[in-house]
Length: 563
Image 1 (cartoon, rainbow, N blue to C red):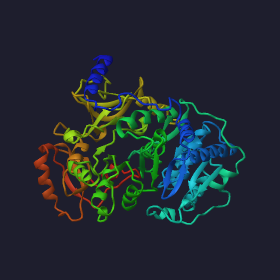
Image 2: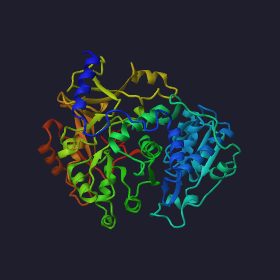
Image 3: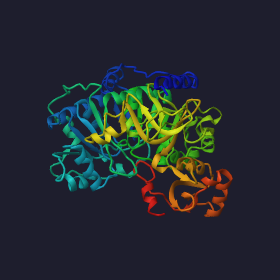
Image 4: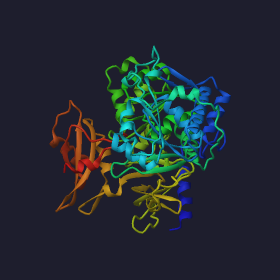
């Protein structure tokens, strides 16, 4: 099959299905230049506008631009040169934003580390990235000290969240903001150091092709790999996704609690608001009360959240105490709990807006490769076969290939999902063989099972190694998990397979039921027989909780030990 003809046919189908009034090309309101220049432009045009609000502590666009300039100058004084990696080991906070933009402005490479990482995980990532400077949350200094001698670190900067906590916070604050400030010998106090550095503005100006970040994969198996992303990747992600999926404008108010070390949180919290020039309400972490209070207090218009978080809000005893009617766009991410028509209807009743799935994406692609916004009429997206992830964002292409031969497969076939995007990683950091294995002729071979339907929509079916063969029939754990998500008494579910002499493989569902639900696996099995083909019906294992990664994914490798 000819690839050019395939892509032409697919583009025609997708354009026919495109939601009315939605942009069909990436949008660059300040031109194709790094987002550091977007920040400078907003600082010049609306310098007094609030760029970031953290429980009542505010930074204007002018102040964020000035402080990140100071940060860039400070890093240069400390010997950081363009291309050097700077690790950031912090929860969501204004210092992370100042550090992020400062790192990019001086031409260095942002290398985020999860603040939940313990010593071995921190040591691995610092050694892998070769970072010689780290900006960290002061409460994590003990962990940094424990690994510093075994890594290349030569400078440690630290900052406290408590020093930014207002006397009278605008909304309830988490305990992270209440921990007393600490500063160890030999550690640079970040905020005073910003004002004490001699230089004022960085001389360096990054280019779109320059490396901007090492975003580490957060997979559930194997050691994380650093995905090399450029300034151009960051810009394209915003230009292709924000206009079609969010519609942010300078007057919008965006809320983010997703962890910003994670690439989805980086997009939602660090990049999208600066691209759009809108106000960001930043939460240090998820707390239902803080979330509801922030929406009501700041009249938040846009946010993203996990389906689990939306369910917690819907079922919260105090939800009626908060006015959430300011919301205009709420995207969600299905990890454990899945978006269902019931959740959507209840969310619409509560807020007046429609809950929609954000996108399919990977750390390798900067994670916003498809969109479903505008495809919710009559629950079209939810009534489509799971897992429906919509249409490619403008400028991104998909194809489905045979895993073994690499041959292009016709529409409707199931095979390896491949993606070509302007935000594709340049490669895995210091892993040329791994890079060559997945990057072929400009396409990322994801290793994921997928399908492009006859109408041009993308379906994500899961990891190839997770696909089960039951009596010769293909069974996709992601499909079974989506079906379990429709059960009113199921809180969470993960499906894996075990060997079976008679059937080849047997699906096994690890299910967490709601606390008030009858703990009856037989009743659940009967329900499965009613809604699934007989060969798909799994063995039921009721569990109290599922093992999770820091970004909310199930550690299925740990479940395998329970088979």
